[in-house]
Amino acid sequence: MLTGKNESKHVLISALDWGLGHATRTSEIIDRLLSLNYKVTLIGSGRGYYYFKQRYPDMKIYKVFNLTLRYSRSSKTFHLKITWVFLKMFINILLDRLFLPKILKETKPDLIISDSRFGIRSKKVYSIIISHLINFHLPKSVQFLDTTIFWNVCRLINKYNEHWIPDYALEPNLSGKLSHFRLCHPNTYYIGLLSRFKHYNCQPNYEYDIFCIVSGIEPQRTIFVQKIINTFKNTDWKVIIASGAPEKNFEQNYNNITLVSYMDGEKFCQYTKGAKYIIVRAGYSTLMDLVALGRTALIVPTPRQTEQEYIAWHLNSQKIFQKISQKQFSLQSFLKFTQQAPILQKNLDNLRKIYNL
Image (tube, rainbow, N blue to C red; front, side, top):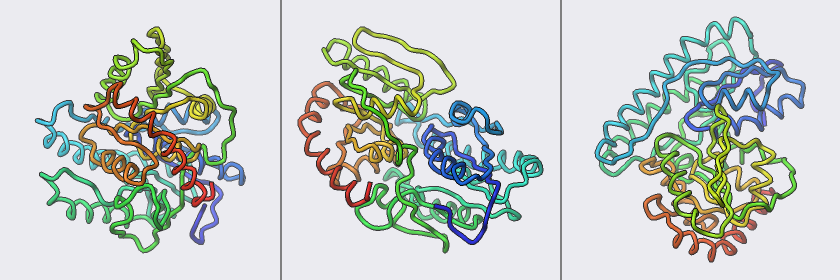
């Protein structure tokens, strides 16, 4: 997986914490490096930091501060919120640049790999950025900003020695135009599926009928959890919901429904393989995990998170997943998905053959 001419022995790895997926997917890289006897040091914040602490308890992990991202409950304030989102991105870059010199002085790495944290890089250390999001899919009312944002993202990416895209170069691919429409770095590499489950084996757990993976940003994460509970609480379906919060530790039961704060990789794998049906957000890392484990799902993108809405549409158009909006999500829409699931699963199995998974 490592590219370039550098021969590194100590690697500094960081991951964005806007959702848990950036941290979880870097596990494939971390585990590979450890198997090759590289020394690895991690930088994390928020939920990503707590994931690293649970997954790698004996590893040196730097905890840094970043502003937390939240998405709007209402479309009326969306434009103000999206402006604040991009402002937070640049504030967090400045914060990372502030913390980084001390970390570099203490660790003296030979290589930096940063998953979507654009402030973690150095002119003195060979630096690689991981990101599938180059071409933003903005709402129609602000699509005139697409090109401006693209060139600003390119400016950030081009400060690195290499750009890794977790997807496949040719069709069929998973991210569509988000990472295939325009490229900006001369050393761009499509590295294929990036998932902690790519080479993972586990035994299916058939305890639950429905496995719900609710990741992403507040307040919509909590809103969706409650909608799932309200949808299935008076049914015969046995449901488990993983809410993707490793910093917490709780398990709540609502008759036929179990809500857990966090699920480790082993249980995640077991329930993904064993559940009859899966419901997920359209987080890119989560969807790569499902492809790696060979399971289709009903995907419900976070409202007004246009990247997720596009990816959900893109994979729905390939007929390997089925998309439904959070507003339209209901028991009736779920039952329609169960009728289509065998066809979707067959299409996904064929795609995995193409990917040699």
